[in-house]
Image (tube, rainbow, N blue to C red; front, side):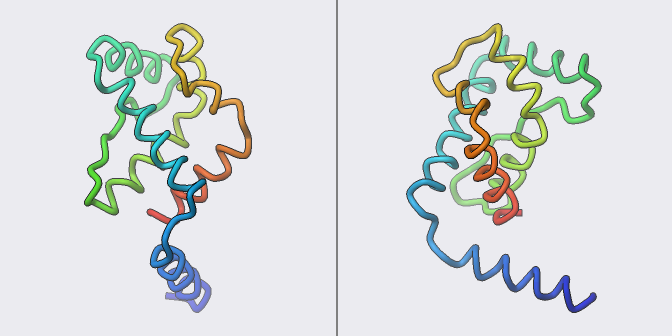
Length: 119
């Protein structure tokens, strides 16, 4: 392992050890709500999977996270970030209260930051 990779791991661990700010907690909660909106309805799940497949994305399923599993949160946030274009298209036909967040670049920057921390 190179020195830079070790520094990166140490930095991530120190970030992860700090409590999340209120704004990052809100992003985490909003992310869970977005995923739950699709996963809680079998029709939404099927339509979203079909949309992802039509767009050529290999990741066609969403992951639910459990509060106690750190790695699961990272996977959910990473998948949400990777599928952001598919979410935008899905929300055009299936309105959701948090769909406006997908047009906010700052929200996505914080989502990417969270994804990196939890990964």
